[in-house]
Length: 548
Image (cartoon, rainbow, N blue to C red; front, side):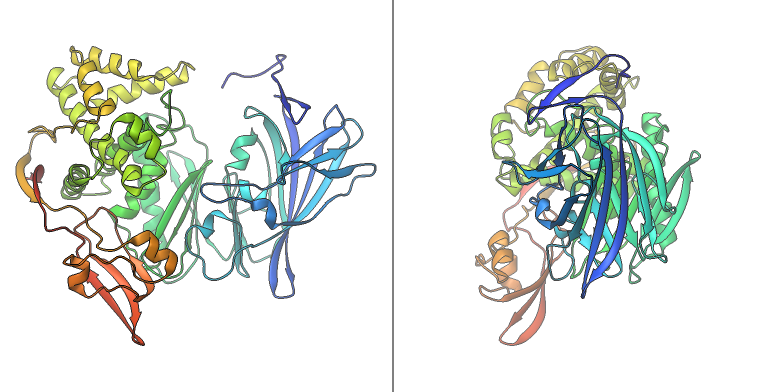
């Protein structure tokens, strides 16, 4: 981002002039109990605009969660001769005040959900007797500003319980913080406080803080901290980028079983999972995939429809997730090859494998199959191009070189387009891939898995694979909390799953036919677990790999 000096960038938000210049935001946080209900009190001090009208953005939405403003109560402006007004948007308030007057705004946040902590409640404000967790989107009210706006932020946690650990995207272990960052990064930050165990490790001298709560994990805290350090180092090494000054990871336990979720935020990673999970390729993959987005998805963004371009944003990220885990010594060669095989199988077995680019973009948010396909398709295309680049350049170039050139282009503030992507691959291979790219990416033809795609010492073999078949209507069943739509003669049927059984919990690795589905049900007053491999009886032949 170019430094702004005397040049002013002007924009109009609700009729108010806002300037791309540094302003100050000061927050003070207080935890309190209202009866038996915990609350978080927030006080914001900032300066009003030159116009005498400031628009205040309340907590609003994040990911698939909305209406955070409903968690806000007791919203007041404590400054003399300043008034607070509603607007047409319930998440935005209008403040009228003297020009450039210092404003003191306070509000209370109350958790707006009940029951046990499960996905996606972790995306909303979590206020529990022993801890709190928020993204900036759910925690911070702030004056509206454009995306380039820079703020000098001050955080004060002195009024939080004295025994609590403080940690967030900006600092950890202390109760005060001052720093300068983009306002959009402040919103996209993670904040936790409570009975967390705080650990620190260094990667090339840069601190990584890990905050963990819960005592029933299958692993030691030190194992997770070590794994996080290795993942971050492997990816920073790959990009030759150790400039990030600080990073923060939090882990909280989900209730029930069979669920884990990870989300990358500004200089941070929010992790939650049920406590039966081991530190294995699935958890490492989640950490690695999301951290890789710091470059591919933040710096490298292909121009055009976001959903149509998920083949590179998600698919190439998925490819490098496991490639770099292996390079970093975090997973074995056997695990890397196994993940490649399972991804190839998922791609070839996808019922929407041959959807064209427009169909992909149109249906991305309408179907699980369409959401999963770009990860598998992009992975397989990356594997295809990797082999092509190495073969045509006689080992001089690889897909790594394509990614480095894309990032270099982005750092020059030049647009990333498919034409540029093709141009780079053409130059490095010495041949024109335009027709192949059109066929596989735009038109949806099946991408071939070529012999020798994984290099020397990795043998090829042809295997028969079965499609993933869950055997019942998952979405309808979860919503109804009972089994709906069991397919007769499926593996689920053979295992004893029947319509109308009460669902107590599920563990499903969607798309993976090698991991059993576990359905905890209650029927006729008895509780039991039903397990089965979710595969169809219909099979097809694909190329897989094995370590020699």
